Length: 253
Length: 206
Image (cartoon, rainbow over all chains, first blue to last red; front, side):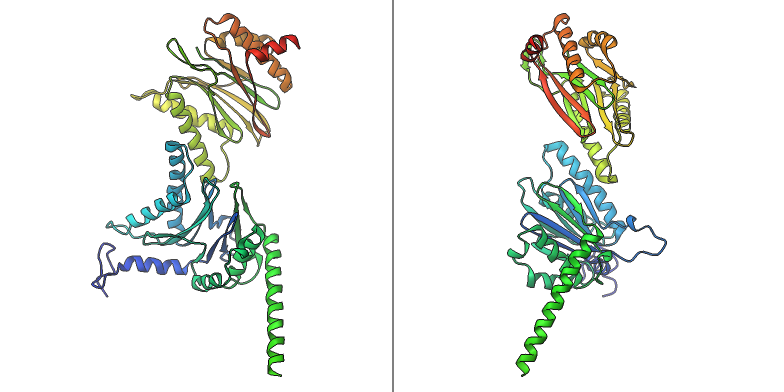
């Protein structure tokens, strides 16, 4: 494989772009982020990396607002994300200036993805080492969730996870996501937190959760609110484990 | 031909703009809004070269929005006015200067005070208690010199605005029948009832 993985602009004999694949590996090292699309809310949750004792907690922001109605979380190289966010924010305003309409989620996702793809096809520049979850509401109040990855592809999802242990979280979501489960804001938030707790050390201090509602009001959950939901989730887990034990005991009898 | 009037009182700013959009001898519209909301507590009233007004005000508005997205908080009125003025000044000595006269009005949450800035097409700027643009401005300045007090209530300020409009309508050769009135205070931007012939007649009888 040596020789084909150095330059981004070279295909390997079996059709791989190794630099892009290595970028995807960089994403897998980033802290987990999960996005869930509810009926009338969209929820983004991220794992907060433990900060050093002397570090200011509030300077680590993994959920960013691109526009009034667009939210983004990412996994991977933070510095790369900063560049993308900067350009995406300008594009959101530029779009409004030229066509008098706020961007649709698909448009801004396509813009970010096109930007990423450009960097997979020019020499001298490495791909962006981040995957993004872009979510929000279109003008017609439909909630949307999109995911992009370093290769520049994007897809729409009902719920997804990126970063470390994303596979585990995604499998959990596949098992537990139903339209009924996300009918209300409370349920959607609970599902997102429950999914994150599969792979994150429990505790509200390790999670950052953002909710965006139909009217484009964004709210970041306070630690106390997250802890409340975490407590409910843990209790449910205990109850479930207890009933399972009882069932297996009675079966064994 | 166009007229803008602004007054800054102790806890609000009131801006009035005429609503006539005319081209040569034709009145295209008499309900034309000549102001743009730059953000929750910032307003810009613009007159001047048709087209430049839209282009410039929308450009400033979107840049102010971008600042908010980038930095997480809004520009103060002083900073926004400064940004606007710098933009005007930059384009002034280019091949494509903007020919616009502005009043920038806003409420500064940090200092708890409303602010009014006068700016003209030569990129001069002044922070004033009351200001106006246009030929009509000459008449309103005299009225405001005589009657303006910073401790007026909204109703009193509105009544004073009606006096200004009446004077303009009496003495200016160009007919400006309608004026929009907007107020900015610590709650945000509120559109008041436009000053029309009916409103002036009502006030006379009241």
